[in-house]
Length: 553
Image 1 (cartoon, helix red, strand yellow):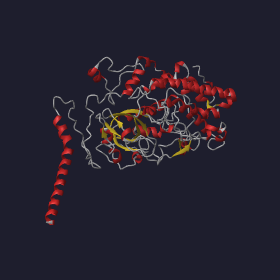
Image 2 (cartoon, rainbow, N blue to C red):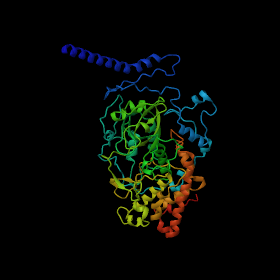
Image 3 (tube, one colour):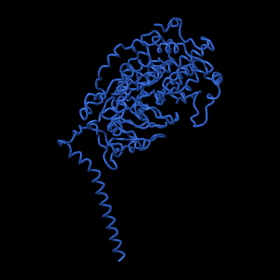
Image 4 (cartoon, rainbow, N blue to C red):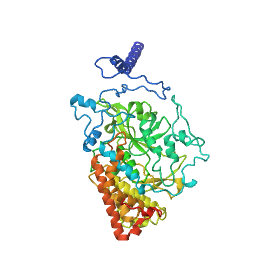
């Protein structure tokens, strides 16, 4: 009797196992059968998917757990612009593309321009091109000191061999494309644009004013095929490392806030969102100020299915993809803040905006040194930093290397002005290239927490300038120039940002806040000059010929 019960129990277990396997197979195949059955059906709005090019063998199982994440890029409305961009266009007075069409007809006309497609000409107001006039001003044509071999980050004529694959941390896999791998023995013209950017770095600047490779690199960031994606380790919020077909790499920050949203007043600066449009605007603002210390950044519309999920080799990232109740593709990755289902990044339905910042040279080729910002905030809810309670704090800083000699304290003042104009309170560290020692510029990295509030000017960001009362003469003259009506900072930045593929980048009140904050900076310098004298406050960094330049031009 016992043996009979054991046999029946075994048969029952086997039947349950077979039923479970059958259900699993049906769940896995059902979406494919549904999609195949709808192809060519008259009522279906989804055209059959285009034949995909042959791929290499998968590097990890591509079997989805519950249902296949379908590519909705051919659905009606898949290219609809986000609410953020439409609101920004209305605030700028542009009006929506579908304003003259109602209902479904209006929805069909509000389509985003696909990446790589020609954009409509800028409005007539921008035809005057004040930005071009600014770059022809004598203050923007000052020559650098003569460059010796030690002033170049890389000497192309040396024995250094530039291998773009050195920057890739994971295993490389060539997928049916042939790329020319430049070395130190080949012509510079044959280098990819990201490598031209790298070899143009010197002691005084990340890139020269009229380097054609920079504009070409910005175009590459929005047009190059993405071949692999991985999450960036460290940091508080999700960032992705994207590798392109030409072996270049960029840091992708996805859209988390709409253009018109301000940082909530109850948010601490260290828990604020990192904004993709702030990274883009920071690059353009840095160039208008003639610092040229922010690596090139461009906005891009990314297909989350084809350009992230399907090409990532990061299993942790891939597992966080899901379909929202609104039928949008979403993912959240892994990070310290805002990486959960509640804070997921969702496409429309699978397209998402983001910023792509070109990588600096790999640390194995060009080491960088990280410095703690002397005016670093406490990053605590109750405690204050020393500089917030000691009005003579700058005197201590100026007696501490590297701030006791050279130009580092003036670089800090430049960075202070830059951060105040953006409203960026999150400047805890900064980096320099180790090769150049202390006599070099500060790299303005990680600007995502700028442009968070347009209705509030955070005066504490200006404390370094108020305490030290030092500024470069070239910086001071350019700030005075940008305060003039014919070179108004807000109009110049607006014109520069129109070149980006996901323009408009900034909500109009943010642009207006720039002019207001610029006046505050000039007032702070004026107060310092009145207190300590012009020669004490304004450091003459111009040569004899440039000293004749004034802002009256």
